[in-house]
Image (cartoon, rainbow, N blue to C red):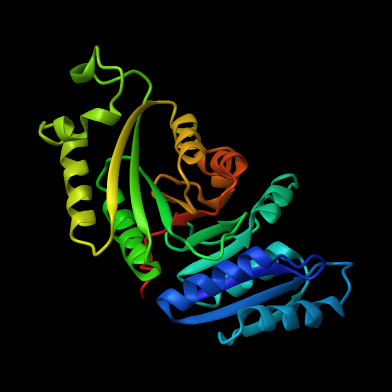
Amino acid sequence: MKILIILDSECYNHPPVLMGKIISSALGGTVDALVVVPKGGHEENGPAVAEQVVHDLGEIKPRILIEEGDTTSVIKKVIENNEYQLVIVNADRIVRLRKTVDVEPILIKQSEISLLITQNIKPKIHRILLCTACKEDDFSLIQQTSMLAASLGASITMLHVFAGAVPSMYTGLNQIDETVEELLQTDSSYAQHLRKGVEILKDSPIESEVKIRRGIPLEEIVREVQTENYDLVVIGSSDVQRGLKEMLLGNLTIKIIDQVELPVLVVGRRDLES
């Protein structure tokens, strides 16, 4: 596995480094730390941040890249010249750069590379909330998340939210949460894909559970995070058709980042284990 941690020379952020250490220790592979010295920044800060990164990663020996120039161009060049499986960046960079004209802080093939946005990191990941859409594209998402959870020694709660009104088969029921088994027995496309997802989880050496809700996806995800003690939220990127710019400007991903106050992993199609 090849990980890229993106850092700003003007403000050292520990969360991406800590998360890089956690993931790399669990999955192995290599770590690159890109320290971007922006235009008008202080050149001497680059080596200082790099030294702190090496110290914080401990036994993990990163390749340090100190690059000066336009932040977006620097990041784009590094990503295009390397085959990364995972890019890690702090949430404050995402929020900060969304407010600029050039909002794409990472011009990556978002459908391929996984993106981990960090905030409020814990020393160990025990519980993962996996948000799915009960469709075929989610199978890779479930498989990769299961692999990650097994490596981390974490459990998975797989949550699917039926957006809007409750499906007609459940009219009159107060909670879909209590009808997972009934849904699995039906012939609907949701049930077929959910059954496959459940099989993937059962075949993995991890503790797992499945929850189904109805309502507004963001609200239900936030409610789940507020009522349970999770360490990481995982979502898929298969529905992002216009790249990271679209993802950052207004879809569910950025809303989750704004409200759940947990690390969010957007899983791409490039295998995390490759």
